[in-house]
Structure formats: C-alpha cells, structure tokens
Length: 422
Ligand code: GUN
Ligand code: FE
Image (cartoon, rainbow, N blue to C red; front, top):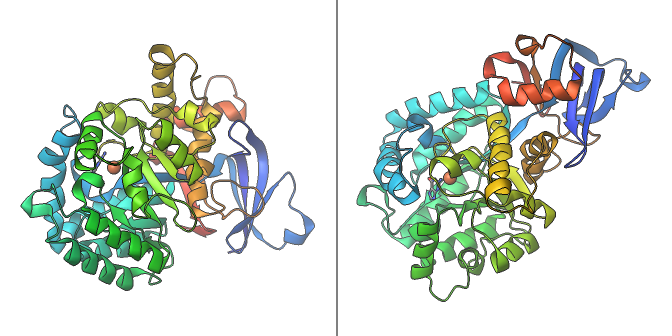
C-alpha cells in the first residue's frame, strides 16, 4: 500500500484554513499519508504514481450518522415530525429486517450506494435484529469502507413487532452479537447503539453501559432532536436535569474510554451543552434531517466557538440524500437561516468550514482521519470536475466549492480507503 496520487489536491488544515495544490503529489506509505508535495521526495521515488491529471483529490468524506435499514424508504413521510414519522414509516420498515432475505436485498442496495458515493467512513445504525446486523457488517466489510455498525436496542415504547422482549434478553442478544463481530473484520466494528432514551429502559441502558466498559466499545445514539421527544424524556425521567444526563448516568455519554456520537443536539444548551463539551462527545449535525422532520436548526456556530467536536451526518432516512457534499451545503444553508432569523450572533458557516466538518470534523472520531497531512490514514476521493467547468478557469478552492454544491457520484473517478483502492 505504497503509492502516490497526482492531481489537484484540496484538504483542510484547520476549521478555517483550506490547503490547495495543483499538480501536487500525495504520498501514501503503508496506508498512511506522508504529506503533500510539489515534487516527489527522493526517498519515495520508487513508489508508483497514479496520475489523475487535472482531477480534484480530497480526503474521503465521513458520515457520522445514518440508518442502513432506512435507505429503502428515503423520501417517504417527509410531512411528518419525528415521533409520527418513526411510528408510521420507520418502525414498520425496520421490522422487516427480522427476515434475512429481505435484509439481504435491502442492505445490498444500501451498501452499493454508499460505495459509489464519496463517503469512506460512517457510523451506521442497523435494527434490533442481530442476524441482519451481522449480514450488514459482512457486506460493509466487503465494500472496503471503514464503518462502525450498531445493532439497535429498544425494549420499551415501541410496537410489539419491533421491541426486544426484555432488558435481559436485549442485553444477552447484544452481548452475543458483540462476541460474534468484535475483531472479526478489518474495516467493520460494533458500536453500542441504544436507539434513544424513550425506547430504552434504565435496566437496558445499565446493561449497555456494562457492555461498553467490558469491551471498550464506542457508543452512538440520538439527543435533543425534537421538542416533543425532549418533553417525553422529561416525563420518563423527571429527576434528570437534562436529556443527556440520562445517557450519562449509565456511562453512555462520552468521557474517558467512552468515545460517543450523539446525533442532532438541535436543542442542546446550558448544562447539556457543557457536558457534551466536557465529555468530548461528538455531535453529528444532520441538517437535512432536521429540516425534513422540522426538528429545528442546530446552533453549530455556537458549538464550534464553544469548542465542541462536530461532524456531519446524513441521518438517512430523516435525510433523504446519502451525500456528505449535500450535508455540507445543507449545513451552510441552515446556518444562514439561523443567522438571519434566529440568532444574529451566530455567523453562517463558510464553505471551508463545512468541508472541514465533513472530513476532519467527523473523521477524528475514527482517529487521524480526514486530512492528507503527515500521519493521517490515507482515505481519498478523486473527482473529475470537468463536467462542471466554468467558462473561465477557476482557482482550485472555487472548483472545490462547485464540487460541493454541484457534483454527483458519476464524477467520482477513484476512491481509496487506508491506501487501498475500493
Ligand atoms: N430518534 C430515534 N430513532 C430515530 C431515527 O431512526 N431517526 C431519527 N432521525 N431520529 C431518531
Ligand atoms: Fe438518526
């Protein structure tokens, strides 16, 4: 896995600083970037060069939050809010994954789509069904993408056809699934996934917290997405000061040894916002979902200025598009509406900032991921933007902006994950 890519290179150095180099070389040694150069350094002169000419080369994109079983019905029920959308569309569809034949078909289509796009890493929710979740993990492993996949947990406030029989049986099934999947794959690993507080008893969350500790696994869930949901959590846990405190009381909310992704955080503020930051929880910002389900506009500028860790998610099927480029533009557009209509102190996100969120922002959950600087894992996407060519030649950062706003999967020429072409 020693190679060099040549092309028009773009990557983030920091939230605000985009690095660009036309006709540059990125050196990959053993799956890790050795940096970007104007000329190939002497010590790498034996590495073979893939010359992509004028094409643009960027780090692979990172989708911190999406639901594989929801790919099949994206675009449906988009006139509903979260809780009605879940019971009308999500739960009936997810119940079908009890059947492996159905899961096989639906998950193949999902993985094909993810593989064709610009995403190289993802945090993925499956369903409560362990066999179908293992099948999904095998397919994702095969795709070459790096993914964390969660068998979902729900043992209350869910329909009979999509509810684990008891906290004990959910714990045992989750434990068995961890034992079957942990360390079995190169690119795919399990992540503890309580669906959200309303569908998980305290007893189940206590068990998940124990499994997290025992196996040292990461955690993903949903937080403060919708006002009705938040009011419901308050009813269920009247003594908790805020929603996130419920996860925290079971050891499922970041801190030492508990890498955690919380999707949405649209309405997080005050003590919840402080604990997110203190515990280094990753916020998966899913602007398209938040718009479709009329959940609200997350205060991403405030989060960034407050030092939160933020990445982007498509939240398929709350979001109907699987593209993180689309999530970047949605994030920018939502931030503009928030600035104009809600909070004049929260300046809109810029293109370089959104690009950072979709690469290093989410990528850092996976380690040194999302950049081409020395030491980063080598994930790259090569895009032929000639179909988008402007009448006048554009500087590279403007070509990147047009790719973010306008490109589609058909313009992807190649994709590399950890130095391997997929
Ligand atoms: N909260 C709990 N489950 C879900 C889900 O499937 N999608 C979204 N957007 N929010 C949730
Ligand atoms: Fe979600």
